[in-house]
Length: 283
Image (cartoon, rainbow, N blue to C red; front, top):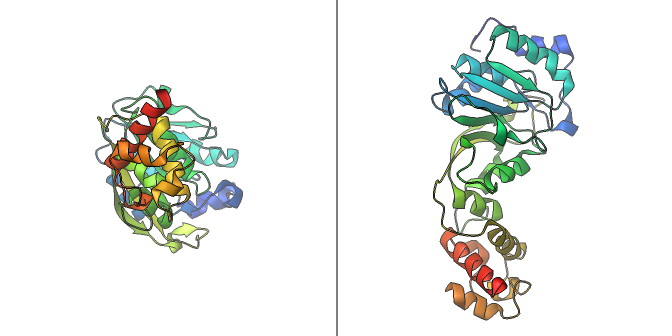
């Protein structure tokens, strides 16, 4: 295992501070510093960057980000038990690490005073990862405050984020992410790299914002996609009945066949459908 700094091994840190991972907090600590450094390097040049990290736990990825040259790391940690361990990391990298004891789901990071671009890099807690991503890609202000997301998810969730039309994993999450971002898979990490080992493989993905997504009302797109994928096996003329008294005309306005199914439509088609829905609703 790589020695990236003079701090104690993570297993010793966990033992010294009694940091047994808690399932209720979605914690699975990544202890292999070779892997944490690989994640940090995957985020690109960090030398003039503020990195926002969610759920640092005992600080394995935090240490890698700092060792990789991040100008500043802001770590959001909900579990107060982890704060003493993170304080030791902060002392080792003076002036470069800010630790906030907060809930990432309610913390508003858009007001961060970043030095350079802000990149979000995290081994996200399993129980809140999807919602955090949705929060970051459905913000009203676009382009967003962040310049990239480098995130570790359960493999099944990662596949739903980067999926394309016509695949089993394609759905609302992939569509929203694909509308506003370019995304791709970086690499998988097996269960044995974590403590405790999860039952599934994890996947690191990266998203970068599209500065000019196809023009569309966000709320309308969310409504249309949620309705369409709520009954994904049905033809759209049936699954979209709750949206309009005349579903066939709505689909015709968008240039979509009523016999099509949600999983076959690309992002452009959904944007067209959402725009047609907005026009009829505001008429």
